[in-house]
Image 1 (cartoon, one colour):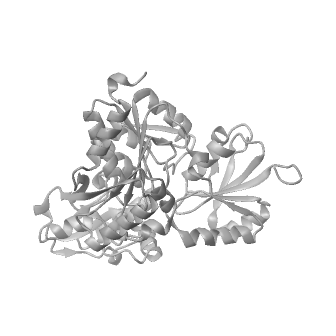
Image 2 (cartoon, helix red, strand yellow; image 1 turned 180 degrees about the vertical axis):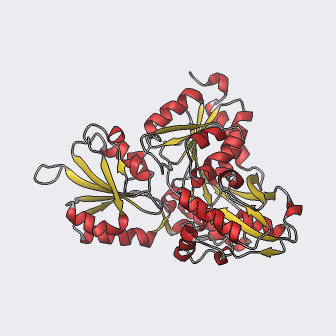
Image 3 (cartoon, one colour; image 1 turned 30 degrees about the horizontal axis):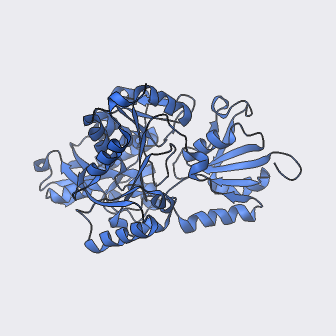
Length: 453
């Protein structure tokens, strides 16, 4: 309540994920708070919608507007905002404080909600996989864990960090077990990048908007929950084991991005990813950070193994490389696994996609000039996906190397053959993550026969 006894007027800054979750578990039923708006950032096309009344609850019969973050100062003043809640991830520490300065100057308090206020407890054991930046390799580790736990006689379910970019009401609780499920839900390319690899490996993925209901649904089918984190956010579900990945290809980022540093400080296990591709000096640098910030965590070196479906189809050819979109954009990488695979296969030329870029894709290159001679897999909307296809089709390339985890040929109308690059987690030391999982299962007696129904 404010000093005059009226509810605090709350604005939640988000990116169609953490913002909705924080509202659901902290503010939805709190009569001392009145959430007057969300703002949208990072993800194109997510503003201009409303958080629907069916999800917002009885205190919000008209739902809640989702506005452009660019208008933050004006919104705070026009809506008499008392508190601004920062609720998205993978943002440089300095950038967070710039946002805070805008809110403070407009007369509002600036608040970060922590894990204990926002994590949900599960009836099942939970292993969470998180990272200090996007694009470190969380989903690779999660897929590896699905196989490892299944081999141990368990039935895991993957809960994926939210990506509700469409109709929020229909996306409240989502379950994906087949490619047909993805088609029926009209998933964006970005959603497919995260869901498809799990499904292809025989896993079941749950996602959506209301994670209390999502967790309840998953617990009905699974005896262990795997949280597959997004960006560098901390889990929505309270973990019994928190695995955090650090990236030696971006050494120093583990202490300079929010909330990745907090996530690292929470870690039970730190996995140093991509050790097969990074310099030893950078590997040691991130290990030093891990030892300093998470002194009780086990630190394990690991690798990301990149393979190409048909190397002979790439050798000597003019190639356009399509890599994971978020890794290249707000993840800050200049290239991804597709570029590595194409060069390893002896591509004759890596065609510069900027020469054929059109529409939304051209604007992405203008917004993120650090991106090298690779094409970010952007498909948040049908028009953006169409521009991606046109950029590829107009290029001088003979072959497309797709480093995006989704089946690009399935979702885009391409006139060039596509060769997929795949990347998987692999142990690099003994004992490694396998031993950690053995210890975790053994200490808790977690076998299918011992889990209560």
